[in-house]
Image 1 (tube, rainbow, N blue to C red):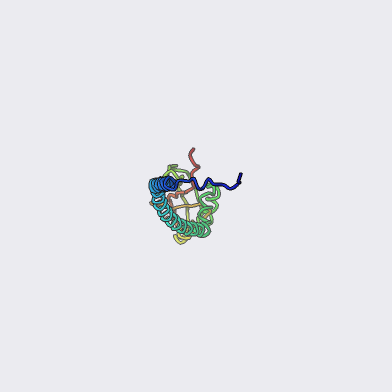
Image 2: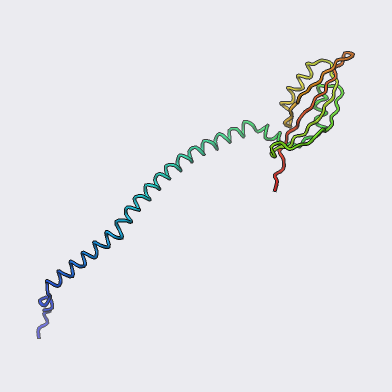
Length: 180
């Protein structure tokens, strides 16, 4: 008995070629039906992703610029933001107005909503002063006051006996509490 393997000699090469041809054909059919369309879809998806990535980068750049601008405005306008948050006190305002006027009375006229973000108080100020220059200094002083205060029309100035009586309305703005 010889131990030489003779199974290779029994191989039918024609059958082998037919099976090989069928294998190649099935492989090519699977390749063109399953893989090639997915490659096209992958390329399309990759292009969409790249476009979205470019758009995202542009938006992030704009957002970064806006955030920087916002921070600069917040730093620059810190006094205004603090003035909106500061609680208005009639006594503080009367003592402030007494720096410019002799007799100051302050009464609340009306409270109304303004664009649902701010509360507006209308206060009627009646005072006596010697010269109208003090009234204008008072208006300039409102810019430095710790609240956002607007002097409103009509402003009535009546002169009698070397004293000018002034009557006008002011509006005090403050941030309204958030509605839940």
